Amino acid sequence: MPTEKRDSVGYLVKEKKLPIVRACRCVGLTRSAYYRPLIDRTKRDAPVVEKLNAAVAKNGRWGFWKCFQWLRNDGCKMNHKRLHRVYCNMNLNLPRRTKRRLPKRPRVPMTVVPEPNHTWSMDFMHDRLYQGKSFRTLNVMDEGVREVLAIEIDTSLPALRVVRVLEQLRDWRGLPERIRVDNGPELIAESLQNWCAANGVALAHIQPGKPNQNAFIERFNRTYRDEVLNANLFENLDQVREITWQWQQQYNEERPHDALNGLPPSRYRRMVTNENSTF
Image 1 (cartoon, rainbow, N blue to C red):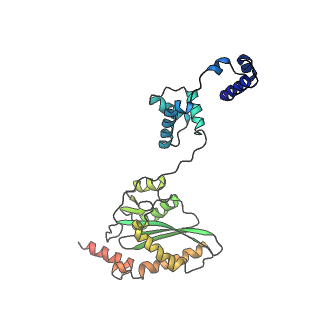
Image 2: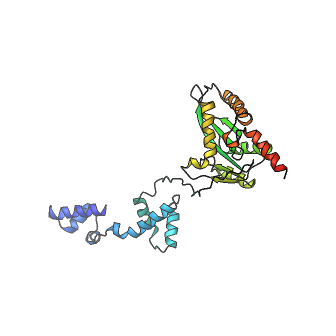
Image 3: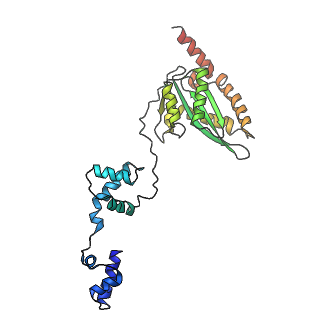
């Protein structure tokens, strides 16, 4: 606004030949403001703008007063009113969307110990009923003996439902040393991490975008997709659960597995357990 008034005064003085005093009075600008030299605020505020950008980039949820106190502690002596003007000019007062970033995941070697309850793996799958309603499945596998421990089916499977499935498996099977999972929202949830920490189970997250690091459950998912989900038209969830349960029993008890010397997973587990118990 002062710049526009200064331009108006200049127009009245040059074009209308008015005295400066009268021109300033017409536009409501004091003579001291008219004679004051212009200041390039972009250059003057550049250091503060740089520091504000650094603070917001590192701490995307900080508001104005957090940034103000941080700059004060960093040695910036700018008045809070002036800093708020710069803050608003940068549109930092508007709601900011911050991208959720996953922590860096180290690559975990896929070493397979041929014994039960050493490493489990979990993953989700999606499909639809005949009328179009979608549902999800939570698949849990024991990698050491390739045995399917659970296939939980429902329209929604949040983190607390995952915890409930693991508690049911604990009562029946015990718990493994670690569970290999991807970085889905249910599998990085605080409730699941707290439960695993309380039960002494390590969560081995694979690297983002690297499903091959969870190859055992991915290979099982393809088999389950081909032999059950793609082979049937389901009318309701109870039908999905019933057909899946029958197929799971056949998979564990009868279906030969190439990696187990042609034995079914359950039979291989019993053989390994008996051999270990003799020592």
